Length: 115
Image (cartoon, rainbow, N blue to C red):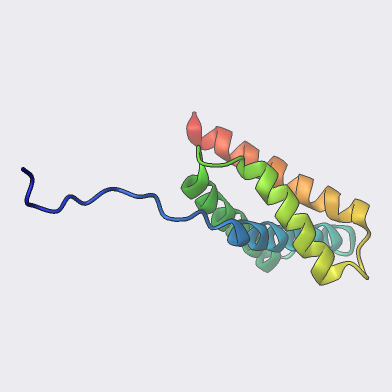
């Protein structure tokens, strides 16, 4: 008979809301980078901010990998949050394009890290 308690490893809950927030933040960083590049040049501050947003999103990908369809969650929740935050100023089509851009960049980062 076992008398010592056994600690079961239980995975922490998935931070799905945070995935949406970080995706939306990275999408807005991409929008700012695009705007700056079209109007006088991309600043180092914007480059660094965009890189930081992608690193934060990659860190979440690492937490969620294999436990959910990360890209689907990021796409749906990121777009929904952007719509909520900026829907009056940004079209649904632009929101989708920004989120897709972030997902594509993240996928390249993931492939690079896995090789």
